[in-house]
Image (cartoon, rainbow over all chains, first blue to last red; front, side, top):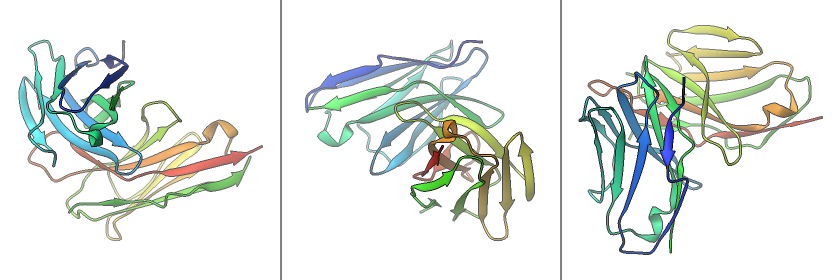
Length: 110
Length: 113
């Protein structure tokens, strides 16, 4: 069974731009979560989608948004990028409460 | 503010020794507890899950849970250099539904040969 697939692997953006990251979950998994990982704050929960609906949301500003499609694929969008948004963004699909992570998208904001 | 606390380390053990990793959590409503391993430059990988008080063993790994003390631990027996990684403790939140884990910042383990 293929794992969680995230694209792109690396991104470089400048302040003020917006970015869209993509995630394809493990086949059969209907829940997709997004996390931000930074050296200072560690792994922080952004949001979770299930059957195209946002089920849970973490404490991030509204610039961070996401959506899920009918095939369970998910995208997250960050608008008006700030330097502090530089991080590894990890997508995870879940089954039985367990998270399985993709390889992540490393975002650098210059 | 729901929190998960871990010693950042590094925890250094010789090859063949037992490595003991600890984690405390603040949300008494948490029901599911996980240990993830993250190698440098890689994404976290689930290695253990535990849901009830006591011990759960899987190969060289043993997870221990004490809900009264709000404490989770991971023991790695016969530690190998390949176990050198950052170990993340994760706890579910008492959200209405779904999977929203709170992670500790991780403990870095170094196993020397």
